[in-house]
Each structure stands twice: as structure tokens, then as C-alpha cells.
Image 1 (tube, rainbow, N blue to C red):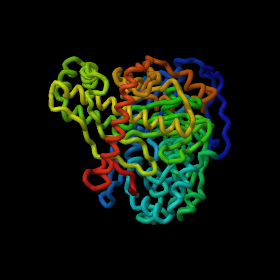
Image 2: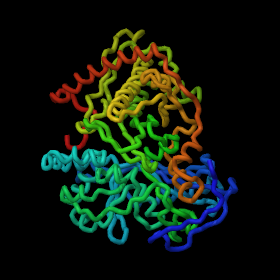
Image 3: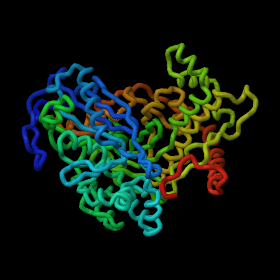
Image 4: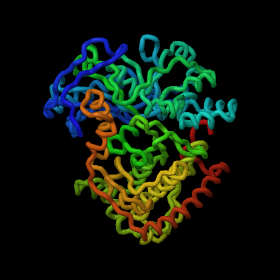
Length: 548
């Protein structure tokens, strides 16, 4: 990895106004980069040194308010959330005891799909979080009024209507016409963070691509898509690649955050894509599984190809020139938390006495259970079906009433195996239409802390599983973008590869792989039957996409 000694920032347009700091900063003890992460459940500011080591973090949880007038609404409170982020930045600086002038640059990452609307002066008018689902009727209307449009748009953008901005903007037009008429610009949440820092509204492909109003091939907005459904085509900001300097912090920003005036503000991107950067998943064909509340399966593509069956999402990567096929397994982490909280008080108590995590105790118990968990078949997340996305009712099938054969250890192992099976099914869908072949998968985020789960994933997929030292890599990816912008790193891909460090590799056992192939076949048949119960109104879906 090359560390560049001289920083000279040359910018054009509005971002060039004012004075940009410049100078030498080869001294590793003096140089730091800041990443701001607007996540689903919290905001945080994470400070890194120039070698990618986390120095300090300031973090606070936040909630997204529901408007009682509109079912399933989840608004993003820009006023209170900006103050929260300012506190996080100050806390990170205070914890680190880093002099503000030693911070070289700042970038941001965020949950995807959430949007903010601004007036002509750049003042926020309205925002919503990624989990906002108020536009179900608009999704339904789009499908009915334009029967073939969703598929056409999917092959341009890689997105369906379910999570995109088109139905949300139509909802605003229908229910908040005064806001819609005043809207001059729309951006993503990480863009809003940067705009709050420097006053410049811009976006990047990795996050804006999730709106469904964006071209995978051009890596730029496709405003004609908005126009086709009766929306304005003039509200989309300039799109630049992650690592591009877009502005500088103002004196007002300094008062609010403790950061110095003139600090370079650098374009970041979507949390998943920048998380992949932090994991070194930056080349075509590389594959990652991120195991959090949701599990994401991501495969890097050298060109933007979409799924003929429209089952898999495709996004622009944060690495220029790359796209990513993405599948999602729903509520995996949430299911594990439900099981722990509902049934495992004793294991939580034991873990507390031993000073370890309750999941560690449960994994140790599940390690004594043979593969296939004595036949238990969990029914939670289905394989991803992006164009017709819903899940069966949460269930545990094929339980045994003999407590010696069916207890907490067996169920816990079955849940871990099931997450790996759904992951394998999703990856196979991706490999089928992309032609990508792999021998290694990077496994990160919370689930990768469990060695049993890592081994199960390797056994189910039949490939090597590699676990990094830094498992929560999203903020590191944001810091890398900042580092590229201020000249620390020559490129996002180079920095991602240079900064990642590996903890352990897990090799698949072929006999267990054979067993899991049989389990997967039984699970697929059982899940299909459970979907018919939902279709018949007998059971209730765990989740349905808006508009279904």
C-alpha cells in the first residue's frame, strides 16, 4: 500500500470555494480519517489512523418515527439525527484525544434506500428510513398501470419497485403535494450527512443505485424512468464515484462537530458496498456473506448483468467499474435473538457468570449435535425471489418429542444450518445467471464471530470460508473512501486489499457437505408447502414486499 506524502486537492465547481487545507502528513501518529455511519439502528462516528486501525468511536442508537396517519411509515428525523451525529463526532474526538487539525478528511456511509428531499436552498423537507413501507399502494398501482415496466426497469437498474424510490416519491406526490412541489433535490442518507457537513448535495452509484432510478451501465441517474411514471425528472443531484472530494467543512460545521473548517468532505456510499471494500472484496468474482440482522450474499461482477428470472438484486459496487449481485436472507440475526430471548434464560445466566456471550454457550452446546440437527427443518427466510418477494410463516418442522433428541442445542444448530442453506441457495441463483465460479467466500459481521457457524457455512456451501479480523467493516470502507479523496490511497480497491487482515480459514468437510445437500432438498420441498399455506390464507407470511 502506498501512502502519498503530499496532499493537494484540486476541485471544480461549487466545492472549490474557500480554502482547502494542504500539506504533508506522512507522520502516521498525526494523520487520521473519519467515517460517519448512518445505520438502521444507530449513528456513529469512527476515527481511523492511516493504516486502517480503529482509534475511537462515538455511537448512539436512534429510532425512526412513525407517522400515525400512515401505516408502516418510518420517517428519518433529520434535525434530531444530525444533532446525534454531531455528538458522536465530538465523542470520537474526545475519546481519541486526537487534535482536530490532525483529521485529514471525512466521508460517510449509510443504510441504503432511505432518502431525503430538499428545497431549492438545500433545506431538508422530508426524509424516510430504509424500512419505510408506506408506499404499498403505490407499488401496487405501478404494477397495475404499467404491467411490463417493472421488469424493463429492473434490467436497467437492477432493482424492483419494492424497495425503490419511485413508489415513495409517488406517495409524496399523492399525500404531501406541497412537499413534492417544493422539492428541488433528492439524495440518499449518506449524501445527507455529507451535505450537512459541507453544503454540497451529491450522490454516488453504490447508494443511489438502490433507488431504482439509476442506470447500472452508465453509473448515473436515469431520470427518464421517473418521467415514465409521472414524476419529475429534474431533482437528481450530480453523481460522482466514492473517494471524490465534493466540498469542505464550514465554520458552522466546526462549531457543531468540533471538526476544523476546511476539512475535505469526500463522497462515500452504501453500507453493504463499502463494507465489502473494508473486507477487501474489490475484484470481479469475489464473494462475501455478511451475517447480521439480515444476511446479504454478494458477488462482484465485472459487468452489470441482471437475472433473467428477476430473483436477484444487482447494484453498482463502491469500486468504480464493478457491479454486485446481491441476495438477502431475511431476519437471520433477529431469529437467533428471538430464540435466545424466548427459550435460553439459563444459557444467558451461565454466559453472564462465565463472562462470555450467550451465543458462545449455545454454539458449544450445538457442537455436540450431529449435522442435520436430527431432522429439524426451520422455516423462516426463503430463497430470494425479488420479483415476488414474500416468506412463509415462521415455523420449526419435524420436531421430536423425545427431549434427549430435540432440545435447545438441536434447534440452535438447525437455525445455524438453515441460515447457511438459504445462503447456499441464494448464491447458486447468482452463480447460475452470472457464470461466476468461486473457491472462497469471505464471511463477516456478527455471525462470523461463531466458529461453529463459520464451519457449518463452509460445509453447506462446500467452499473455503475466510473470516477477517475486522468483521464490522462498513466504517472502515467509509474511511477508505475518505483516504482516497485526500490522497492517502491510490484507489479504493488497492486500499481495501491492503488494509484487510485475516483471522482464520475454514475448510469444508465433504461428508458433511453431502449430508447438507440432502437437508437442503428436504427443506426446499417443505418450504414450498409452507408457501401454499400462506397463499391459501391459512398462515401469515413472516414478511411480504410492499404491494403484494
